[in-house]
Length: 313
Image 1 (cartoon, rainbow, N blue to C red):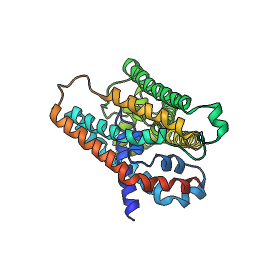
Image 2 (image 1 turned 90 degrees about the vertical axis):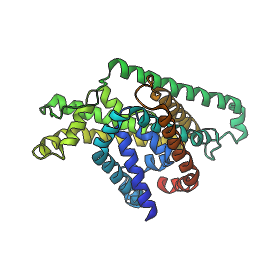
Image 3 (image 1 turned 30 degrees about the horizontal axis):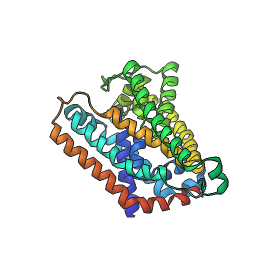
Image 4 (image 1 turned 60 degrees about the vertical axis):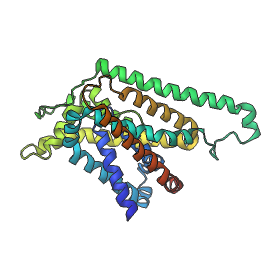
């Protein structure tokens, strides 16, 4: 029961992260050391879903609660305390990096250079060079992604609350935006909501979520969220299946790219202007975020890692 409650609260944090442009929900899944379980649990295999309902149900309910209940609160925190909030999330991300380094450079039983044949084909120093190169590629990708966002994205996260008229063009746009955003949610370091911002569907979706709680706009909001929801579900299953396969077949190389993406996300999240907050308080919040993530991985790493094979069965 305690594990179910813990998973539910982790889901709340992941849901909150997914509605903040620039913050990756996939990164927080890594922070709480349940990434393998998460990507393996998202499946169309009903037998596996029912078998792992103690993980799947609370994580999904938590994500839904985080998105519905905390969207307005987070919007106010970001608008009133932008630097302090940003540094807290930076601390969370940095705190997860030691664990990812361990996963990247450790030896895995199924795909390591333990056999003499593999040692001759690929010496250890060559493999480590490739891993470092993949980390650098991940960092470069995030920086390039941020450049696209600055140049082409809609930087406004505010909405007027006015819902657009439903049309075929809007439905297709919401479906594609939801699909690509969901795939990004699975990948640590890449913000799904930032993808939606670039595709100019984020403000519409946020307005529709708020509209669900307003009398008289529920049906209109639900009709707008339907294609976006279908796109998100499709993207989650497709993205999770791909990453699950990569972690199973080439774990070190997969974690190397993920590590690069997460380091890159820290670099682009560092604010350029330090006049919008208190630097001392921001550093304190950075430390709190780091401690929360780092000690969380220390205390939960062994138990969570041991449960991954059960999900894969």
